[in-house]
Image (cartoon, rainbow, N blue to C red; front, side, top):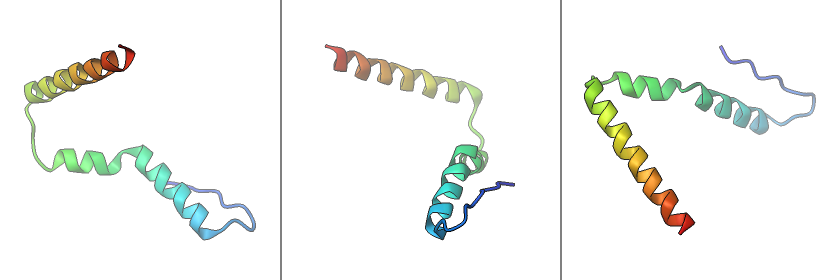
Length: 64
């Protein structure tokens, strides 16, 4: 359970933003979406390798 301390005089909107930020950091939604369908570990690993190669390519492009 998330606990958000709200100071006296602080607006509800600001507290709601804090809650949303904290909730996103927990990764609950991401886990739920990943559990909706099974993906083989080999496919996950292949996707990670492709993503890493793309990031490296983009990073080297920025440096040059």
